[in-house]
Length: 458
Ligand code: ARG
Image (tube, rainbow, N blue to C red; front, side, top):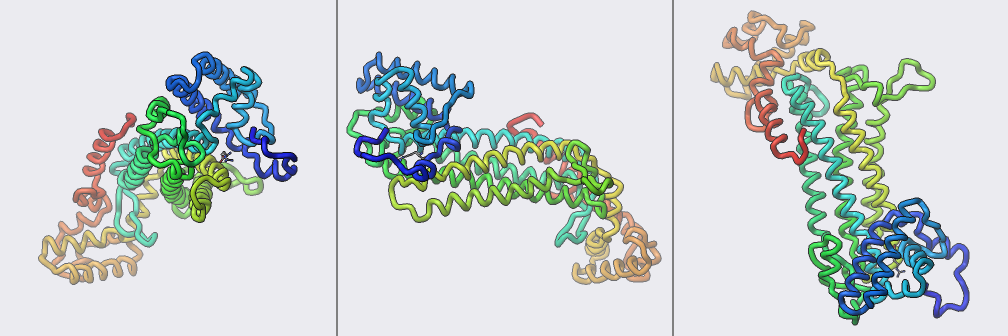
């Protein structure tokens, strides 16, 4: 397709290093859609006759049908998906196929195709996020009052509700969704018509092709348009941060399912066994979500490094933009689906979670707060008194709520009977009613607000 000025063919290895069809064949739908929009515009502008445009359009439709049928014949000599489509079009409709590439370059072509693909990937990611969000909200509703230890430094801190914990992840997803949506808005400009790098002398209607392909407007600068891959970076950043959030949740599931925690039983559907240890029940899916995040982060880094030293405009380095994006898309889709499935199916053991919350003397802050509120003790002093109560409980092999009123009054006589009531984990979580707090009342409200705000019914 470009051999006019060459006498010899490429070396075998040149052909091999140059060929991207095995990877960029995933752009075929976008390539055909953009070509059809381009041909229609050329005809409307009188650059292409309407008969030629009609032949090209139905030919492209046929190529699409063949590829959809799995009939794409890959030939490394044809380099990439753009040349494969054009070549097959030529076989089907003859030399008129050669008119399709008027006022177009593979540089604006690939930028357009790839943007369309990434835009679709964003829409898919948004759906995956919606599904996981729905699972989180449903479990939060179910467990609005289920008490578990809340950790700082992975040390038992204060009791929290499992519903509140789930909704914390939902907040991360809300931000992830806005990052994807934001990058979609920013990227939605059509590079088509930028040609190789400088624009073209043909009287194109770039607004027409942009509109036909669902873009908001054409890009403003041809040099930027053919070499810009910021949209891929934006996508990968949103994907990487989403993957990091999934990895944190995966890590918690792995911890919770471990025997010393025992907060949760991973159902058979999300567990694997060991080939040697018959007792094992491994959280492989959660571990792979955690592992996949490393690869998605790597995809983001690969894309940034690919771009960092590139002078304007297009360089073939940019052909390597696709593997990280495809990889991240596939891994993120699987991770979101696996996480939604796990969250929906986890079998919690509330008795274990409650016992763990109580075992950590996690209501010590509540005792200190009682002293401040009911006995007018300054918080620092109250903190000290509650600390002595914890030491007393520990020495007695008890939990804080196992101490008697006499035990507590021996530490400080200002403590009265009603202080005992605030030492249970249930009263602790019930008391945390500040906006954004863990109390079941606030969690139920947050569930209702999340449902009202979510795009899909939870
Ligand atoms: N396969 C190429 C890519 O993905 C298409 C653009 C080729 N352009 C060029 N001038 N060789 O980047």
